[in-house]
Image (tube, rainbow, N blue to C red; front, side, top):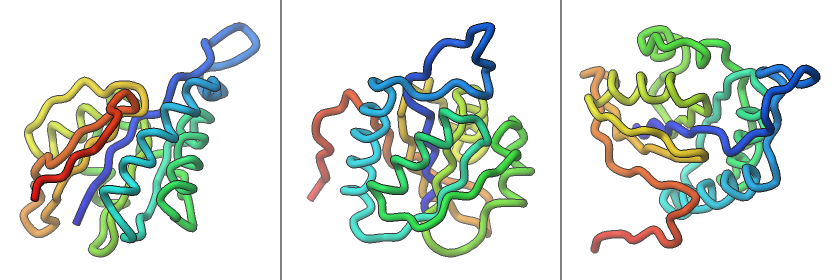
Length: 157
């Protein structure tokens, strides 16, 4: 199965009036999320995905854009995505079936990537890592990483 890890796009800064949890995407952040999501949709073709997102506004907005581009019907909010503990995420969210997208924040995504496939990537804004994950062996292989700055996704023949 595929596990897709996606970081939110650029968000408005935190202020006295806007808490970290309430920070929404900027127009640029929306464009970033849309470009990355479109590349993922081309990669996945018509495979449906299940989307889980942290409860923060910027991740929920990013997940909404991802759902539009990848034709996902539902977005589930998961507090587990605010934890660096991969086992908790794995135990509560993963199951056999369609690809799963986890939309969260940089330090957590980096931890999940390291735990699932011993790979390290500094997630760019709206960056997406695609992992081919074996649930029985509890391990995966990083098969793709792309960002909104990537202009074209090339496939090998």
